[in-house]
Structures are given as C-alpha cells and as structure tokens.
Amino acid sequence: MKKLFGTDGIRAVAGQPPLDVTTVHAIGLALAETLRKQSGSPKVLLGMDTRESSEWIAATLTDGLVAGGASVENAGVITTPAVAHLTHAHGFAAGVVISASHNPWVDNGIKLFGPDGYKLPDATELEIEDEIFRQIAKQHVAEATDYVAPPVNDADRAEYTRFLLASVPGLSLDNRRIVVDCANGAASAVAPQLFAGLGGEIVITHASPDGRNINEKCGALHPEIVAKEVVATGASMGITFDGDADRALFADEHGRVVNGDAVLLLAARDLHARGLLANATVVATTMSNMGLEAALGRSGIRMLRAPVGDKYVLEQMLATGASLGGEQSGHIIFSGKSTTGDGILTALLLLDILHRAGKSLAELTADLKTFPQVIVNVKVREKRPMAEIPTVVAAIAEAEAALAGSGRVVIRYSGTEALARVMIEAESEPLMRQHADAIADALRTAIGI
Image 1 (cartoon, rainbow, N blue to C red):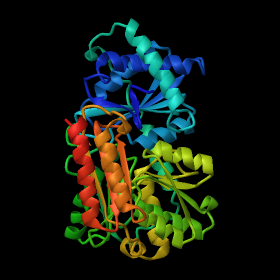
Image 2: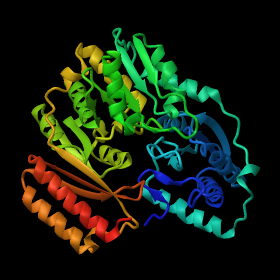
Image 3: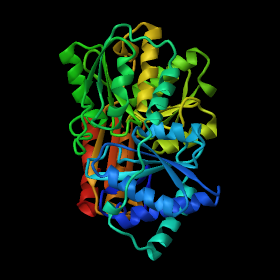
Image 4: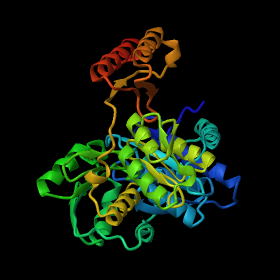
C-alpha cells in the first residue's frame, strides 16, 4: 500500500513531511535512481505552479535529481498538462510538476509523468516510494537555501501554446465576449496571451499570482465567481481553471455553472456525430450524475464508471478503447490529443464545438436533466476502512435501502486531502439530504477532527 503517493502524486503542507527538505531531496534522489535503471543518463522536465513554496521545492528536488545522476530542464511556471505533453514530445525520461492543484496555497505537491506523457502507474509509484525511504534512511541534506533551480527555458511554454492552437485549427470565437478566470495559478502564464490571439473580446480575471492567492475565491474551486462575472459583463460564456489548469469548468450566458458532466455530454455527442467516438463509449466516474448517463443513453452512447481520479479514468479508457473520458470536476481527457486532463485544451475544444454548432452553451446543454446531488466533505483524522466502522456501515446500508432504484450512494476518502466525501443523489431532495447528513454525522463521530 502506498504511503506517500495519493491519487494525484504526493501532496501535503509545504515544509512539513513529506514535503520537508529532507524528503523532497530524497524524492529527487529516488526518482533519479529509478530512472537510471531504465536509461543511463536520464533527463527530467520540471514545471511548477505559482505557490510561493514551488521555487524552493523545485530547487531542492533538482539538487536531489542531479546528485542521483539525472539532468533537469526547467519549464518554470506552466500547466500540468503542458509538462505531460512536452515530456512525451521531447523524450524526457520523466516529467515532474510541483503543484497542489486545487488545494490552498499552503499546500504543495509533486506529480510525476512517464516518458509516454501518462501519469505513473501505482506499481511504479510504489517502487519509487521504497527508494525514497531508503534514501531518507541514509542521507544528510543542507538547508533549502543552498539549492538553486535551473534557469527557465521559455521555449517550453511557447511550444505548448503552439500545440494547443494546432489542436483546434480554424477556431473562431465568433466575436463572443468570454470571461477567463486563471485562478491566480499556472494558467496565468499561458491563457491570457493564447486567448487574446483568438479574436473576440476576452476578459481575463485572477491572473495576478502573488504566491498566496492561488485558488483563493476564484478558479474552478469557485465557479460561481466566473458565472457572476459573465452576467456582470454581458459575456456569452465563462471559463475557469484550477491551480495547475488540468481541469476547467464553465458558465453559460445566463450565469449557470456548467460542470464536467455537461462537457462530457457535449463532447461525446459531437464526436459521435462525426464518427470519432470509439465504441460509442464514454468513461466517467462514480461521482458523475445519473442524468448524464440517461442523456448519453438517449444519444446511443454507453457510459462506464471508473474510480475518482483522472488517472483511473484514463486506465479504463485505455482498457476499453474509449476516446473520451472525464470527471464531473472538470478533468476531461480526449484520447489522441492529450495524455491527461487539460483544462485549456478542453476549453478550446468546447469553443470549437460551439462555433461549429452555431449555438450557445446554454442551448447545447438544455436537455441535461440532473438528479439532485449533494456532496458533504468531512475532515478526518485517519482514513480507516469504512467497513471497520459499524455506525457508518449501518448509515450507508439504511441510505441504500431507502434509495434503491431511485438514487446512488458513494462514500470515499479523498486521495489528496484528509477528507471523507459523502455523495448522494436521488429523485427526492429531502431524502437525499437526510441520509447524507446521517452518514456524515456517523463519520464525524467515529473519525472526525
């Protein structure tokens, strides 16, 4: 069982284990050691988001990598999917992103990509973990101030921008006014210039990172912010990214939030109509609404469910040959165009769908009727198996019996935070909330903080 890696890399409060100086240096050494087994002189691509801790983590990690026999190219502040793309395009042995995605600024993380541009499988992460603990046991490190990150190669960001534009040849914004919220994160380094070159009128918001304002009352964590801005500016739609821009959410012209389920529906229908939706199949997750499944079914499209986490969506896509998959949270994967969720690419492809359809976002999502859904997050002190907590088991069983045939119950631990997530959807909203609160209360009593 993995101890450091969650569903999206290693993530913690910056400066505290496992993101203290000693462990970060050991991660660099361990990654270099693992890569050297595959190639004699591995070259690693490094990118980061805008958190104030990203720079010292990059410097410390680089020193460990170099000490372990690897060389490092620094792409600087850049999106997670950009690192994935460039790693594969240029044959790097690995890509490393320093980011905690949607987490608060005090957190940070380390995500790893293989030479194929895909996130590492669990077995490889376990191998690296074992090596990290071996390195920690034997190493002595200096202070973080002793380390310096390599100079930034600005060509990496420019190349990624060219790749994005090439993915949507002939894209026109049709003179639309569009609001783009960069979450004061990595998108701030890419999106403003890219969207400005597409015509139309672009209103850029939250693109002034100061190291501590990433995701703060903005971005995909707070899509209602861009929705309000759409209404205030009379825009035709809004786009909002998370901290590392591997996902995007949207707002239609009426200021209604459009989540990943709706994007999957639009993209699936568009690809299906053009004969490009492999096996007429879409891979979603356990969190996707039953309404999406019903809407896809009306279009003759099958929906499969994977565990939460875009790496698990991708695994099922590869196993089933599906060309489209994603999460309600806005991670969307277009097989053949990207190896991971890419918020900016998703936004461009969605804009292209609107252009070719000649319709608005509200018009194209009008028939998506979602079941009422509630998600309750419970802070926990430990992630004990649910089956070992009798009161929680009983509360779940009672909810499942009451909602049989008319709803779903999904209880899981977050892979990136100390949270238990209680998700219930049902035709009856009062019943849904009653059982969500009952399960959440059982969790708080047993293992809550």
